[in-house]
Length: 289
Image (cartoon, rainbow, N blue to C red):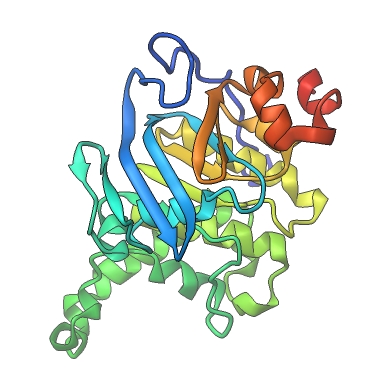
């Protein structure tokens, strides 16, 4: 019998996520993030102006929109990498406004970046181990006494190897991260994010720069996050991937949320077609392929 890990099996899409009529800012049955009046300006430009938005729990939500719509800026605000001019938001009932990024991560909301942040001169395994929180050896005093942290370090290393095998990077664990392909770095960054054991995973353009041969693998891993009980929020321009993977879609334009709904509903929404989809309409996205 082969020791090769089985590919994640996709379950049916999550449904019944909203309450009442679908509209921008529609209430969700069980939201994990609730944002109110979040605004961010740069000089005279309003980058984000979100009146009300809820992200459903244990579902895959895509955040789409044209370039300059404010998607990544909104990501940065939610995760503490930037500060808004006004507004508030909660994660699992806890207010996050003013909370720095490292504390947001420790609370269970982690993100990846469009440009991967792997440390090229460390090995793949070392990159993974850096993602674990609460490491005793990070304390200067404790670092002087290996018996205080050696057992925990071995446990972290074992957890890292389990994730590397799941993401099919186990053969690369001793390689420098700089030697990985663009797609493999995306996989490494996603796997490293899971070292924090998060409840919410936020992915910024996970398909950007990825070889088409690895896209299906990434899709499967994103689905597996949901199947493992996590919530996924991702920014993406690949409309076929959005339709294939997401349970719910949120559309931004000029900093505001202009539409929400299922992938099929969004692909036929006139406001979305005008603002963003354009040439995609009538092709595979609208066809549901």
